Image (cartoon, rainbow, N blue to C red; front, side, top):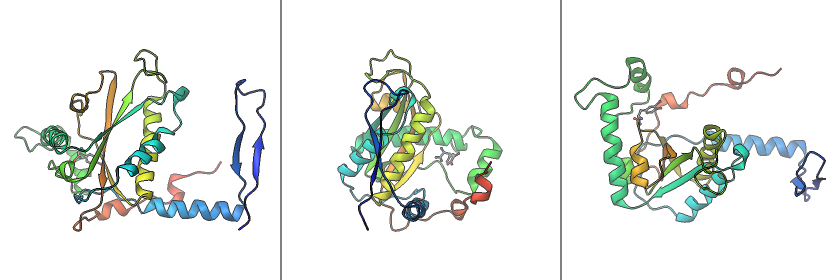
Length: 241
Ligand code: IYR
């Protein structure tokens, strides 16, 4: 394959005075299609995993995935996220205990009526989830994702942030994609409510915990619910106008 030419874009009048040229490799249509299809096929193999092995994974993979997440687009480029990486057994245990206590209230296995409505519980029946979350202790890493309501780019805790949910959502997608490319299994876990994570991770009150991303290798017994394999076709998720 020949080395792709590059397009150089001249800083134009719409750009800031210190704008830098933006270049991308110029791919043939065939190459662009192949790359997009291959990447799509690869990403489609990602499954949510709920049964992790205790095998360690390299810290460098986690670091690279967080750097990928940190390169996500964000409102005013304020990068309104923080990733707390949990690796010690004590902190994992603290998170598991607090999360399971909330989940027992959610599923109604704590004695009281479930906090989740009947429709929600019925929707989860397809996935077979329940209040026990052993993976929070088994998996080698938990990444707790925080959204910063304020902080700006210099994290002074004062400046307003913008499109925080959207920005953090995109960053989480890039984190998951990078971990998948590295051959690791992930689970987006959202105990509700999850305010306890702020305290466990020592984060300030203006940060909102968004999710726990559990990272590791699937256990040898790991399975995927058939329901999770059902993905909507292109015709259902896209329209062309
Ligand atoms: N947080 C609970 C419930 C749960 C909710 C949704 I929506 C899911 O897609 C999966 C689980 C739990 O983790 O079990």
